[in-house]
Length: 346
Ligand SMILES: Nc1ncnc2c1ncn2[C@@H]1O[C@H](COP(=O)(O)OP(=O)(O)OP(=O)(O)O)[C@@H](O)[C@H]1O
Ligand SMILES: [Mg+2]
Image 1 (cartoon, rainbow, N blue to C red):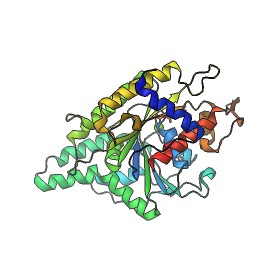
Image 2: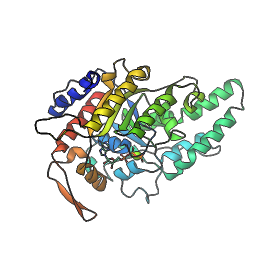
Image 3: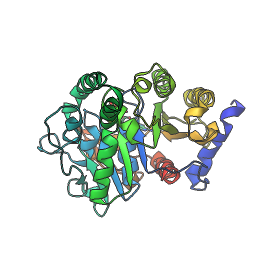
Image 4: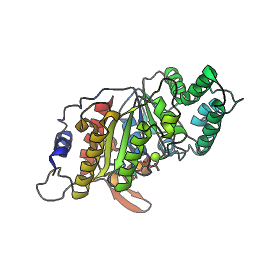
């Protein structure tokens, strides 16, 4: 293995044993989980991290609403107030602002009983937000001077303002935002609403491309993000790249040795992080890359039962779509990895 990723891979042993010292990274209150590609683990990570902490508001800004479904399996039919009701008044004149959107999770997901965790549900109405936002921003740009700045700030900082309000109402300090695979619309607003980003990258080439695209979006002067900055110029840094779906050597005695595919992508991600380190929250690339094993059966069980992986144990099994799914030994390590990520960020 190339020397460069040795620190990252070696740390896995300590994480698995529960002995790893915490990464020397700053701690923030609000994180957005994002990368501009689907199916890489944004929502699964958001769901599992939200169970690992107390005192949290989760905001689902993905129109697919997968995270909202985890929290409330009836959410598609429940006629509730959603993130769209929260945001639309900033883009369409005449709509009144909502008074309260966040809901406690425990009444609709029994696993969250006794947890002080709230969420703002998503809605498919978010599919329209990119065009509504683009129109409203174009209108605002026809204004001149301070009025233009005020109008643009009000739009781009809308989610930030609403999150501050909701956190105050439900009396929590932390916030975690799940996003869609697309930048335009709510992801753009989520970037302005957060202190730092957590970026899942799956061990495949398309995920690497989307990591590059995300970094370019944050840093290039011609990107949609930088062309529409609020007056405070707010740009979140990346706190952590989480390499998801990692696999390990099955050779006897090869404890926590990454398989070939994982090895290749750890190297590749480290190169990208090193090259674009000014977009990260410290100056050492090794502080910003963590590995998360392929969830396998525990992931399928988690999705089917809306159950956090931390509550699962090796040997747990369940029939899902008439196929028996079993949680294997690797869940113990996954639980340690999730806990470590959580301990490092909050
Ligand atoms: N290490 C891992 N981290 C996250 N998800 C994993 C991991 N291993 C396996 N999975 C599985 O991969 C899938 C990831 O789907 P998920 O909905 O979280 O992705 P997403 O990035 O939110 O997709 P979308 O952009 O469509 O919302 C889930 O089925 C999950 O169980
Ligand atoms: Mg998702």
